[in-house]
Amino acid sequence: MSIFQSLGFLRISLLALGVINSFLSPEPGTPISHEWFDVIPTLVAPAAAPIIIMVILFDALMSKIRSSDASGEESKKFKAIMWTELAVVAFMVMAWLPYYMAIGK
Image (cartoon, rainbow, N blue to C red; front, side, top):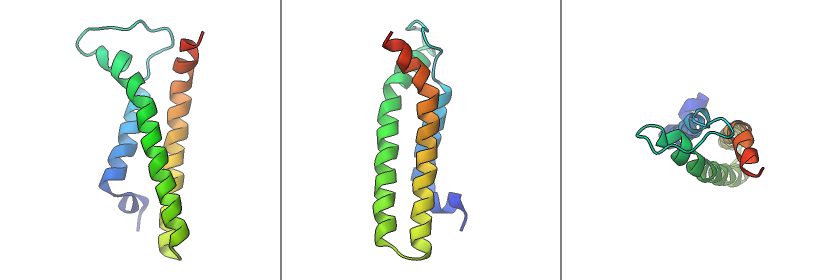
């Protein structure tokens, strides 16, 4: 079974949303824009990033719990899911860290 089959549609959608959100991160110091499409990278994406990260982390926690209850192949499946989700969270944190650090200055 491939990792994509193990993840399932909802997890793949969630992880894709996280990756897309990471690519929408604006440069630090970008002014907020109220124009039609510019609202997404300047207002929506920065507000949604912490929420998406927390949802992915919650699902990683649930995968860890499922892997500890399972045995054999199912345990390996949930561990692979957990590590995949943690990798996406690490990618998101690295993408958004400069933006959020600039807010604090």
